[in-house]
Length: 106
Image (cartoon, rainbow, N blue to C red; front, side, top):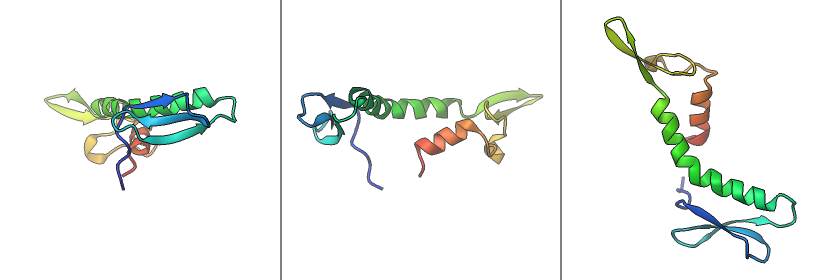
């Protein structure tokens, strides 16, 4: 799978057909949010915020995915959401794991 255009992304409200979303680094147009819906500004802003915050949010989730808990004379790594042991993986209904898998499906 090809990588997405590098972030940060930005909006251009001067586009004649709506709000254009561009990659800041190379200036290429990524998307055009049509101006025929009332929510055009909010939709374009949401796309840009989601793209620009994605890596930081995934990194934050990975940082808290497994916490070390002292269990007697040893430390055990467990998920703070589903309380599963790292060796066995997350519980099937773990929200933290679902979020990470949705963010990085590969």
